[in-house]
Amino acid sequence: MSKLIVTSVSPGSSVQDVGRFGAQRYGLVPSGAVDRLAMAAANALLGNTLFAATIELGPLNSVFTAKGGAVRVSLTGATRPADIAGTPFNVNTSVTLADGESLNLGVARAGTFGYLAIEGGVRGEPMFGSLAVNARAGLGSPYPRPLQAGDELLVAAASSANEKRIDLPAPAEGPIRVVLGPQDDEFGDAKELFLSSEWKISATSDRMGYRLEGPVVKHLHGHNIVSDGTVNGSIQVPGNGQPIVLMPDRGTSGGYPKIATVISTDLGRFGQTQPGRAFRFKAITMAEAQAEYRAFAELLQSLPGRVHDSNILMLDIKALLSSNVAGVAVSATDDNTWQAPQTADAQD
Image (cartoon, rainbow, N blue to C red; front, side, top):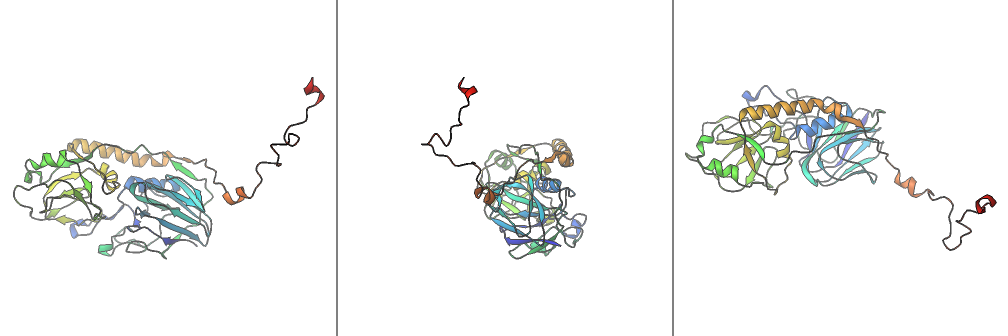
């Protein structure tokens, strides 16, 4: 059986799928991919089910090596340089690694998380119905922790399918959309400050929560409430007035007032925002958020139909350099070597 060897890997890289659901009332953390659209697109490129487990890549360099046979993979998400033995290929395409070849992934230039899908999916033993890793809770498979150098992933042998590309809509721009509440009445005029201000994501953020840097959001009645349920995108405001946006590894309940919630459609775009980049929030209605989610669900279902043959020729650079592609050598100062002899008909 083929293997994909983790030769080196960016911090913050782990196996993620759509997450585990149905038991949050018992405190079971959902986890799952930060950018579901990118994860689903990576799977669509290989003919996997859309929410099969992939490798969620952190923003720094990573190297993966095929062993025991060819391995077919695809890459989506954050824009980054990628090559196999010096031959580059693009994000949003598939590629096959021959036995012994390495896939080299550079630092993310735009976005934070990349998604490396494997033909046939990542193999592991589901924990509460999911392979998604949550290191704090010790959940996930095949490794219940972030990936590290030396890890081996058992994979299916590569098929002979043509390499693919996927046409995705241009990333949305503009403010990150939120629905106010459920405790927005705890903030009074600070709600306007929250919506009118620029924010940046702190470098101390992680998959549990993105800490925001910006003005102090003051509470009307203190920062403690009776703990209640949270969802992905809940924006808690602790005592220091610096909001925290809860991400997939969040706790299932919390005791800070929540000023707003990032809508599901914008969670992936928000999660891909690099630390230090300024952005704003915009409040929309619940009905608008529901309409956006229906459109997002339709986009997810359309992904297999957006996959096409890539029509990209992977050149063997070493073979090309060793070949005489110019034909017979000529001398620029000797016209007998490069001028074709003229026939009598041509002279006439």
